[in-house]
Amino acid sequence: MKMTKFASKCAAVLCAMAVMVPAAAVAVPGTSVFSSNAIVASAAVTDFQYQGNFLTGDLFCKAGESFTMTVTLGAEDEKYGLDGFTYEWYYAPANSDNWTQLSYTTKSVTLKMSTAFNGAHIKAVKVNKTTGEKKELPVRTVSCTEITASLGVPTYDGDNWLKVPVYVKGALKNQISSLGCSLVVNPNVFDDCEFEFDCDTGDVDQAFSAYPDPDEAGVYNHITYTVMKPNTVNSYGLYGYFYVHAKDMSKVNGQTLKLRARGDSTVTGEGIDGNIVYGVNFKNTTVDTTLKALYPSVQTQVKDHKIGFKWNAIDGAEKYGIAVFQANKWVVKKQVDGSVTSWTSPQVGNGTYKMAVCAKVNGEWVKDNINQHTFNVTVK
Image 1 (cartoon, rainbow, N blue to C red):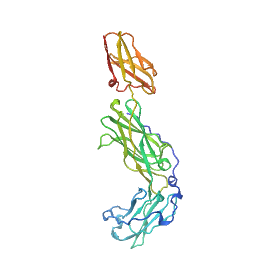
Image 2 (image 1 turned 90 degrees about the vertical axis):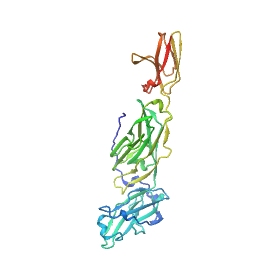
Image 3 (image 1 turned 120 degrees about the vertical axis):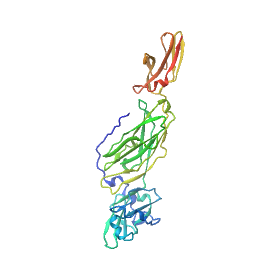
Image 4 (image 1 turned 30 degrees about the vertical axis):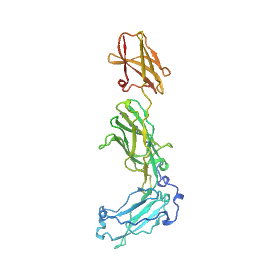
C-alpha cells in the first residue's frame, strides 16, 4: 500500500476579508444589491427544536437563483408563540463591516443572488414583542463562486499503482479549507486507493486518505477540513494525488476514472463571519487512463538452435532485459540498451523455454504481472 505523505506547513493566519472579492465589486447602495422573489414563512415543525436560536447556515447559490434564510426559535421562546417576535434583517458587503438594514420583518426571507452579492454577510435580529428584548443571531455568508475539481492524466507509479493528479481551480486566493470528493473506479480492475496531499496544508483538523465507500463498490471517499488556516494549492491548482492499485496492469488501458462530489468545499479564515461555501463543478472530470504499453510485444524465430527476438519499442525504455524462467525463478540472460529492439541468443539445447522481455523505465524494471506477458519458445 502506498504510504500517505502529509506535509503540514505553517501558514500566515488569514484575515476573513482577504479571501473575498474586492469591496468595489459589491459597492452598491442599500437594498439594490439583491431583489426579493418572495417572503417565505418557515414551517412550524422547525420551531422551538433547539435550546438556543439558529439561523440558516452559510451557503452557496448560483447567481440569478434564489436562496432562503430562516430563523429557528429556541426552546426558551416557546412561551411567546410563533407570533411573539418580529425580525430585523441586515447585510454587509464583502470586505466591509458596514451593515445595511433591509425592509423585511418576517422570520424567513427569500432573496435573489447576484455576483454583486458574492461574499456578503447576512444577519438577523430577533425582537421580542412582549419584552422588547433584541437578540442578534450568528452572521452568515453567501457566495456564488464555483470552483472546478478535476482529474489529471494518470501515470504508472510502480507495483501496479497508478498516480492520478487532482486539481482544484477557481478558489479565492487558491485556498480551500474543506473538500469532500469520491473517486469512482471499476472494482473488477482496481482494488485499493490512497490519497496524498501535494499542496501547502494548513492546520488540518481532520483528513481522511481514501477509504472504501461502505455502500458502493469501486468508490473511494476523501474528506479533509481545516479550522483557521486553509490548504493552498499552487497556480496550477494541484491539490494532491489519488493512488489506485490495479489487480492486473494489463487490464487498465481503456478504463475510466471519475471524480464526483462528496460534501461541501469551503474557505475559512480567522475573523471571518461565516465561511465561503463554494459550488463545486465536477464536469469534465472523467479521464481515460490511456497508459502507454509497459511490456513490448515480442516475435521470436528459432534457427540453428539460436533464438532470435524482435520487439516493439517502449516509450521511455532505458534498457531491455531478456529473461528465462529456470529453477522456479527468473534469470536475466541479456540486457541491451533502450535503443535496441532485437537480439539473437547463442546456441541453446533442445527444450521449451518460458521467456519474457522487460523494459527498464525511470530506473526501475517493469516486472509487475510478468506472468501475464510471458511466451514459450521451443527449440528442437
